[in-house]
Length: 179
Image (cartoon, rainbow, N blue to C red; front, side, top):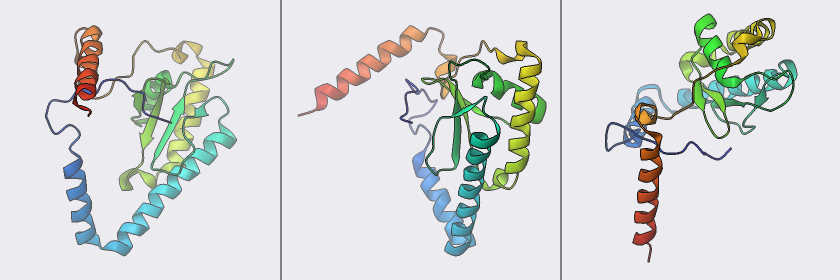
């Protein structure tokens, strides 16, 4: 799935600080070694793969947003009967099971990014997904959400028109800079 999240706002010039991620990765490699780092990576990717497989085979009410092998498992809304609103599902998962999914837009959905801290609990996550879906089917009022997915600090902008104007200015500046 290509990123279609719109404008990304952050409180700092560094954004999501990719340099710190690189430094953190280097520090982890120095601390645990390459073999352990690869082992942990396999564990994380395996857990994500297991979750995707379980969703496909056991939870037809939700649809995967991505199929590629990565630590991110995303689910998206589909306009079909008996389907679950993924934004509402994220709310139910957090409230009743403590799993925090990040909400997305365009397409509307949610995702979990597995880490070493969560990958070994993938079966509990699948169980929580099933339980939440069943809860939402039993209580259809839970299958609606008025929240909107935003990324970074974009949700704190008082007027969304500002975002559109900033995007247009940024795009025009980039185009003007091209030879």
